[in-house]
Image (cartoon, rainbow, N blue to C red; front, side):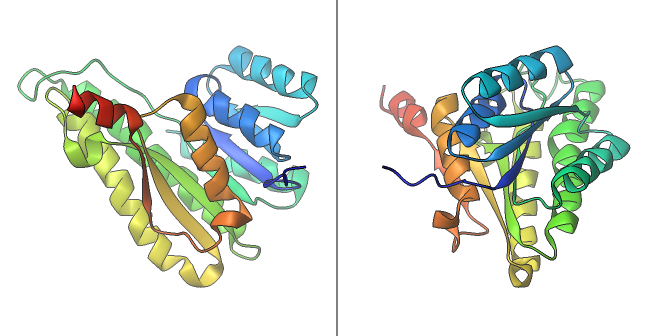
Length: 226
């Protein structure tokens, strides 16, 4: 029987109400983790929790807006209060806007993308790292191939993702002596492919991996070849 790589681990997933986050929550639970899901849409989050529990997994939902410092602090504090520790976190909460050119882009969109994608990831990383200082753990951030390749009509989104990559590398160096690993996934694949990579990065199998940006780029390669 295949070893369950996340057995007995306490994992927090932000942006877990749909898409990549929901796929990750289901996969982490199948691998034996106790999963705490968070997001703004409580009804969708509770549906994912119900699916996980129906399949025999362990999960709970905590509503949180990743752009609000008080929400993030309360979320991580709830995990520690309930379970006593935090072993891993997958920071997947993000907001996406319709692609616009630099000339046509609005300041409001810039502010929203910066607040959620970059500042929200920073808030989550900070709270998670503080919770992991004594026990160690793994933090995985969702980025995008836009961070390195750019995309016409996507300068703001590209910039926030590049900022996440840079912040991840710096945090990994800073936290290296505390047994906290920090990595980034550049997503350009299916939700399940990205979830599987996040699960591996949170597992003991990736114990020597930190400060890396892992590209899920099968679809990207296909697009470039076409």
